Length: 407
Image (cartoon, rainbow, N blue to C red):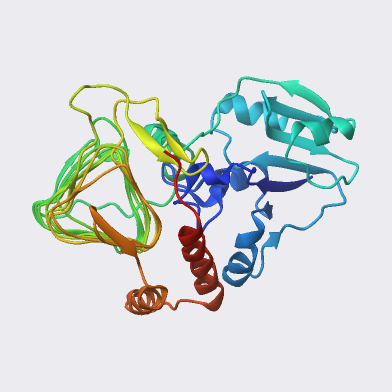
């Protein structure tokens, strides 16, 4: 049986985080959403993604099967399916020509007749696929991922890291609480004064990471490959920090996709950051309203602010965003892809993609200047800005000029 992991038509619900990536490539817990599905159902999966991402993905993953028809028996699984044992069991037990549907959202279906991919219930019904209604949960927006992160760090530790070769050794001057709940990768550097407290959840520090002196890490927490935790940092529970990041200050219940820097003092809480982001010194965000009411945030999918369903939501920041020193980011702020912001104005509500300036006096970021900076930043990591990535960024920039958010 072949596995096809698909993004449904509501990828925009996760903008700006999915401007440059598939929904399945969002990190939650230690792994990305697609990686759990691959490990459970098939390692040689195919992928169904938005047409605007195809050229970029073919360039980055030339060996992937992307948007290709499958003739043989095939299991299609929505990348937004919430990872739970019951969900995985129901998907595994699907018989040919049946589909799991939550109201009108297709979560998974299996076909042995080589039908073309169908992302909606109407099309599946027309093809004589039996519809099985279910209340299995799925991720609706980025806040759902933030709220589920601690649980999935625990899940991933138990299923993928607990039995792997562990390079953990007690270093002089390092304080460890509950060492059996800690996994250390190859060539990790733990400096004197580091505290690893896994009393309330596991800690995974992946290969080549560096934890500098006097940092405190509280589990559940994941530190990605090649990342650096700066001197005196306070990394609280519920944090997933992807590869090649530099993180300092105070961070809590936040996900950082990869290749992003928050090197200095300042608080980041209940936030989701993409890649190639830099937060200036003493930048802070709020993650709880003074009224203790649910946080609303701007949804690209709805074109307006909607209720996140939670009291705690900090900020959602798209790829290639730069914030200057002493920036203050309000509860539930959404900062679009490619923004460059500074000044004393409170950054709140929604900052459209490719905005430049202070929050009260925004203008469109000149694309040529943005691309030059993006090339420089990636070159510092010995990577390059490809033509397909430049084209996609240009498309997003042009769309920003043509569209205005609804009130």
